[in-house]
Structure formats: C-alpha cells, structure tokens
Length: 487
Image 1 (cartoon, helix red, strand yellow):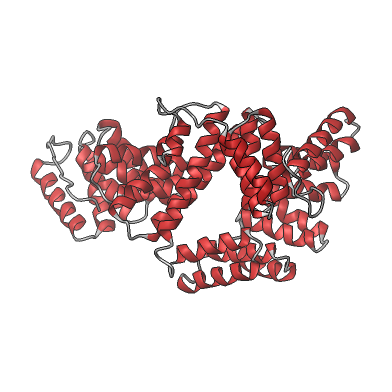
Image 2 (cartoon, one colour):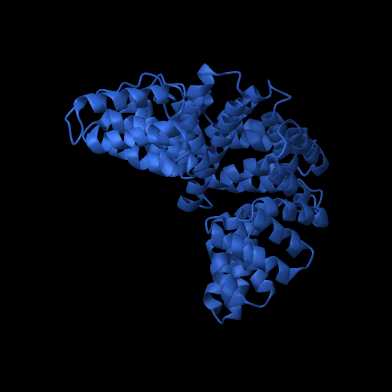
C-alpha cells in the first residue's frame, strides 16, 4: 500500500453523531493499518454513505477493496475519488493497478501515466506502467518506463529483456510504416537487404542493395555491397565497390538530422527524430535495432537468468537451431516451472522444428490449462495442418480467430485451411485480413486463388502479380552458388 495516506474528515452528521463517525473512522483506520482490509470495508462503506463528499474516506475504501482483490469495485470507488480530486496520486496508482489486475492494461495506462506525473519518485508506479504498456503493445510507453527503471535497477534482467523487446517492436513498427508509405522505395529495399544479410541470404541481399542503389546512390549501401563481396571471397569486387563508395561524400551534419544522430551513435535521438518521411522511418528502424542490441548486451551480463535463456531460445529458433533453442527454453522452465508463456515458447520451437506430433501433444496439454488462449489454439491448428489433419485443424483455428481477430497469424492459417478445404468464399476474408503480415508473397497468392475460385479474376490477377514481387524480394533465389560482379 502506498505510504502517506491521510484521512481528513470534515464531520457533517448525517443520521449519526460526530462522535460515532469519529469512532468508526478510528476503527477503520486501525483495521487498515493492521492489514485487515476485508473488515475495514463495511466500516468505510458506512462512513462514505454518511459523508459522501469526503474523498479521503472513499480513497481508503478503494484501497481496502483493491487489497482484498475486489478490483472492479475498487476501480469504481477510486474513479469517484478522481472525479473530486483528479490529481490524487494514490488513487491514480491504485486505480491503474486494479485495471491491470482486471486484465485491461490499456485502460490502466492513462491512470498510471498520470500517477507518475504526480508522484515521480514512487517506485511502484513505473514497473506497473511498464507491464501495462508491454501487455497492451504500447511499446513507446514501455520503452520510456523501462529506460527509467534501468537507471534505478540496473541489475534486474527482466528490465533489459523488456527494453530489448520493446525496441525490436518499435523497429518493426517503423518498417511497417515505411512498408505502407513507400513500399519498394530505396529505403524500403535497403532495410529489406539488411534483414536478408542477418539471415545470411547473401544473394538476395545483394540484389536488393543493387535495386536500392539504382534508385539512390548512397555511400553506406555501397559499403554494404562491398562487405557482401568480402564475405563471399571476392576481394577484387569488394575493392571496386569500396572505391565507388569513397567517391561519395558523407552526409553534411551541420544540422542534427536522424542520419547524423545515428552515425554519431546517438541512437535514441535518431529514433525519436520527428517525421514520417521514408528516410526518417529508415533511420528510426535502424536506430531502434541498435538500441535493442545494446539492451540485449546488458542482458547478457546475467547468463543464468530466465530472461537470458529466453533470449537465446528466441535467437536460436530464428536461426533454425531448434535443438539448441529447445535446451534454452527447458533451462528457463527449470528456473521458473509452470510458466505458461515459457511452455508455449518451448512448444512453438518444437513446432518450428517440424516435430508435429510432439508439438500437438504439448499444445493439447497446455490448452487444457488455458482453453481460451488464442495463440495456443493457432499453434495447435498449425501442427494439425502439417499432419494433413485438415478438418481437425479448422476447429481450433476458428476459435483462435474468434477469440482474437487481431492475431493475424491465426487468420492467415485459418484462411489457408479453409481454402484447402475448398471453402474459398470463407477463406478470402481471413486471408485479406492477414495480408499486412505477408513478407514472401504466399498470402497474396492464396488470396488470388480464393478470389479466382469465386470468379473475381481481375483482383486475383493483381494479387498474383504482387505475390511475384514479394517472392522475388523475400528469398535467396538467385542462381545457385553465384554472386555476380559489380555492375
């Protein structure tokens, strides 16, 4: 319970004498101080009825309700306190905490943000705000709260893990914005090329950089091409590209642009540079990636933490090293048994490793514990589809999509399953909803098939063309073994 609560009662007798009210107030305060919150509630309810205009009594009632887990009642009571005293810090903090426990983190955030402004030194508000923001996908708010926490609790690995994941999500948000604003632009192509480089898809990265350079001749992109040549044992070609790069002047940095901030390693300033132009979104995405890298470097200082094992589990899975990933998730679970999130990640890795029967068994066990978990239902559907159990897969996928329509991966899987079951009209809405997640053209192709089956040939042709474009940009599909020389 936050400290410093004071009950200031101005007695106006309403059916009871001032002495009676004062005695009940003292009794209620005593119960509150002893932690006997359930016993304090009826006394405070009676006091509030007698003195409805007293915010201190309502505040203590709200505190007692919150501390006994009666969060819905607490939120309503504390809301009345805030109607009378909008800047009551304890009421703001406790109201946010109640909404957080009610599973409504988005509603908790504004109360916790206001509480932080009123009580900037309160050590309980920042962690709650960070948790609420992470849970509701407000990664900018989460990053800000976690940065502040990292200064006062630098030895807490959970903070560095949350900060790294927040920055990764913000980088992806910047790229998604660029994708919607200027797909195929030189900046979009260069970011796509960087992704291919990280995935060791060197031919694809080279092709993307060349396409970007054909539209905008930049020094750093030529240096990246030179690096690809160097990695593939073509030092003469690398030298030629370095020579071309050296002829291009570095950016003028008389004014602090996002690019200049990035080059000076002021990554947060680069990320927070205002604007939504393609070049700003490009540097924002790159800067957030660098900030994520720095956060995970801090996390590596805690090699036996659940968070570090989880980070490595994700890293190995993304690299296709599924056995290594499984060992890391198992190590994390050993340190935090019965954690549903960790068990879900382990099942996801087993699924990614194509051990579909084992994945199905694990997921069914987890769904028994959490039957309305949309992500688990989606993964079970994926495991069943991979085993050609099409009709069995549709049921959990439909439930997943109904429980969480914003889980686009589930919508995509459901669309594919319905199309395979010759239900093109049912499949099309789900495939269309999932198109923003399509990076390799497969969803555009599936939707084109669904529309063609319904006789919508013109739109189907457009989607098929878009599918080919995405497929060309997504994979390492150049001539086998060939890295071609500079053009």
